[in-house]
Length: 213
Figure 1 (tube, rainbow, N blue to C red):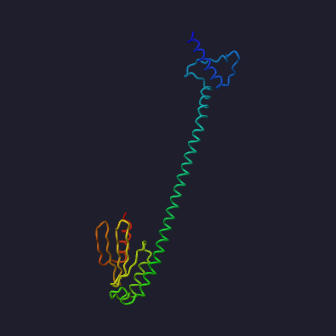
Figure 2: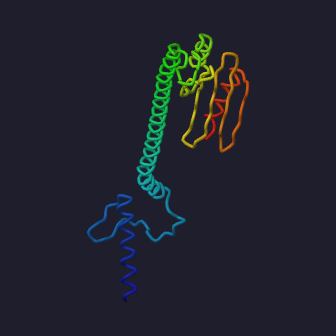
Figure 3: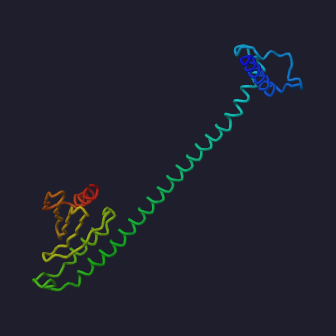
């Protein structure tokens, strides 16, 4: 008796569902049209199958739209992030260029100030700097090939010294004489001396020094 009642409830629920799905009017007696609701799934009429697919499509469409919107939003965020990165890199480049330009001007003024040095300017009998050495150091500092400006110092042996030092204590020293360039480096605790090198070789040493991590 209970089983029969449960079966009747289940059949009634099926009828109610499909009545709503198909838009079939249900009469007060609880019966619907003579349509047989006990058909197997494999024999669903075409119009019912289409309605089911339509319902599924209605549920899926908003999900797809949301998914596409999220993808587009992520793409916009990624693009914005890349734009910000580019702007930051550009600002760093401008700052670096401005810093190097300021340092170049300071170095030029420092080198030109060496013209005022008189005999025994260092208290140890050093001679004044010649015009040639001043002009050579000025040209080197002002060269477009020199990407990194050094710290500039006069020496007591008629040369002008350019020094570079990193936070890791790697060190490079360029010495400009009237007739040559020389260099000395301490990189990763290894000392190297370059007795006489050309302008291009000197620039290459500086570039390689800064290319190291």
